[in-house]
Image 1 (cartoon, helix red, strand yellow):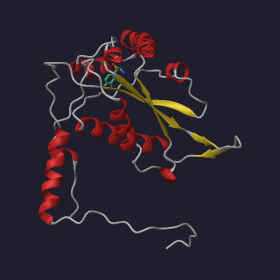
Image 2: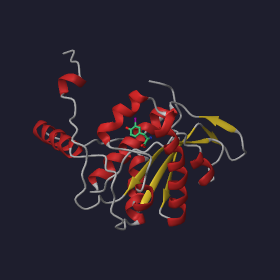
Image 3: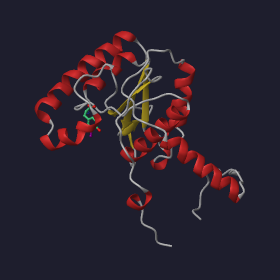
Length: 224
Ligand code: IYR
């Protein structure tokens, strides 16, 4: 073990029976398999406290050297959501009308997406995730972060599962290029926009594409 003067404390993971572990694993799979990306939202209010807990959950994710290299910007302000929608749609219009390849557009066709993003205004909250490519210390000096994209990706996974288990919906929106978000949210030089997640309740009678997930044998190889 590494010689360290840093404190270690006891950790007591849940001790479950084999049967409980089996049930929990199956139940969590069932819950997560019922998640769908949703693009039509209700404007029903979601409290700030709910969003705070979702963000706290995301921030429990493991990260390189425990740097937690992320900032979650939570937006409910109507005027700002409108500005974000306008800027995102401007970029998306260009993407759908020339920047994306015909192959890409063909791959996207089953999802029914286009350049219009009304959910950016309808959803009660937008969570915009920024990755911190380095930290700025109090004296203004820079300190490196590690595996930043991996860390922030994992945190976003935690966030998406937390949103789902709270009975809310989201989608991973990546307007491209995303630098307009840095400007609109006035983010510092060490942050880069990573992902935009609208959060709210699904619209009544919402439809989602009829997609199937790959079976276990297609997504796994076993070396027992
Ligand atoms: N960013 C665009 C296009 C888009 C790209 C992929 I890959 C998707 O899975 C979905 C959409 C948009 O948000 O519409």
